Length: 73
Image 1 (spheres, rainbow, N blue to C red):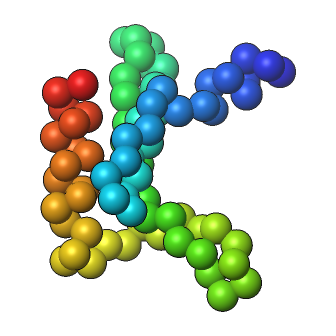
Image 2 (tube, rainbow, N blue to C red):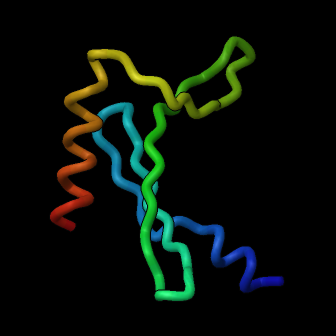
């Protein structure tokens, strides 16, 4: 069961301002591949942390920055 928990951990997380890009390694018959999820952490009305997946115009530069860092890094 420990292996299952390890496989659910992200390979890395990149941040730019309020934007977070999480990189996951997945396996397939052809070998490993990587997928990325982008999110915007925020506190809801009850002060609990949530991750939003919609972005406004003011988030586009930060999204671009984490995508470029992912490509080069």
